Length: 276
Image (cartoon, rainbow, N blue to C red; front, side, top):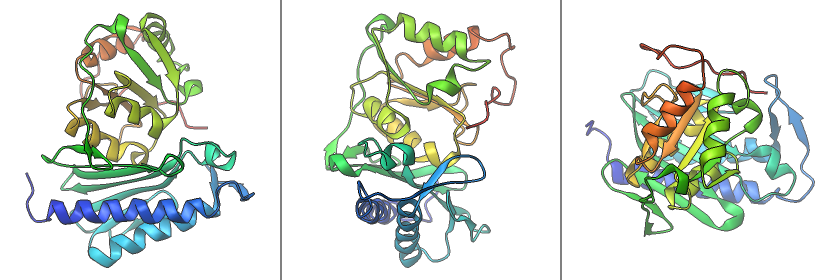
């Protein structure tokens, strides 16, 4: 495992960064913030931009030579072997409508491996963090995934259902929803939190970007679960994600693959419908 970055220090910075982003976003919450549409048709507000600026300032102060990839500002210092991956406000649409399930996500990738992650649900006053080999926590409480192994007793949380019900996933997604004990749609951050806290056994998403899932990987793994893309690789770049308690993971992957007409992928990920 890479050792040239102090993970304890990096984790402290990640936590400070999401705290700063939460504070910046809450200043605009339920105050009529204007919503713009980016070229990729996703929404953005002043809260997104100010939250990202707050995160970047915290990271730059501690690690001026590290690279940063931000959803709103793009890539900075790309020559570094350490890269911070930033989503300043996951769930902008819900944020702009006064919902609860939104917040910042921050991850540190070192030599291609996610080693630190933090995220928050500011309206609920909850912050989550993890570092490689150090466990996952919510506000200081150690997190553990559930022990349920029978899919018939499982709760599954989906991301954006409109994308998941497009080819080639719709049959597999429908089968998983039909056969689970409970199926819900809470979006990215909140859906992943359910797995982290043992309140759901699986979270499935597609059509997303690396900043939507990067911290989820380390958090889920450090809570005792498993994170892959739909092809079963550990990638956070493929545009889709499966996070589970580990015990139902193979069942989820088999069902998703059986629902497509595609052969098992050899080296790449399954196709990802465009995000709209």
